[in-house]
Length: 295
Ligand SMILES: Nc1ncnc2c1ncn2[C@@H]1O[C@H](COP(=O)(O)OP(=O)(O)OP(=O)(O)O)[C@@H](O)[C@H]1O
Image (tube, rainbow, N blue to C red; front, side, top):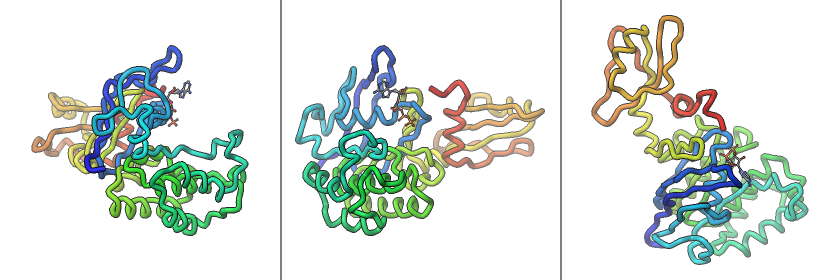
């Protein structure tokens, strides 16, 4: 695939009367790792399932290089959504052995890389004779990762791939992903709740909040253009006038909150005002963390 752009326009999703995605417009470019971050129930899985045509949109369209992906076999060769398989206890695949599951994947996925699958199975010490139902949560996450990477799909989505993985396995996953990304230039969209660890991995972050894209930005730029401002309440009040401030909180006589600015407009600390760099996780909490923000 020479070009590479997957986009959704005016995407709305309703389950019955409940609207869970509201007019989402999103463009994913080839050759990037995106982090998809949102609170429980924000709509991440729903968005990924619609982008990969596993779930119909209520309104709007999904286009790969300008062509609708819905019931489009050619386009769907380039998109793979790796769903968790560990919720599959009651599904048909739960009785399969790992090797049988891999065989099915190899037949179903048009760009399957058997050698890569074998390498990853060894690396994760997965027992191919084990039945899916008998895998631990971490092991089934590993199997999902193996299939996602070996799919070689240009656009590969992973839904909470590190759920249940121990710290060593998570580190392995991040390194494998970066290797594969560097070698292939594929696009990955990864949803995760472990934001801190993934900060260096994502070229861009997408914050999905209550079914809307709240932010889509280059991760490093976001980190460079954001800080936690604090100081005496009246000093902070005066300082933030005309600035973009989020999650402002009062602590005794002091105030603190997140401030964002555009390139070249960086605020300077004063004697009374402290500016501290923030990690992605804190930025996310400032933007989406209010009590009434949960679905
Ligand atoms: N098949 C379905 N039928 C009805 N409602 C659904 C269905 N799937 C998801 N929902 C609802 O849609 C909303 C978004 O769910 P979704 O699973 O996409 O969120 P998420 O961001 O992936 O959450 P989490 O981080 O908890 O996995 C939730 O309110 C959920 O209850």
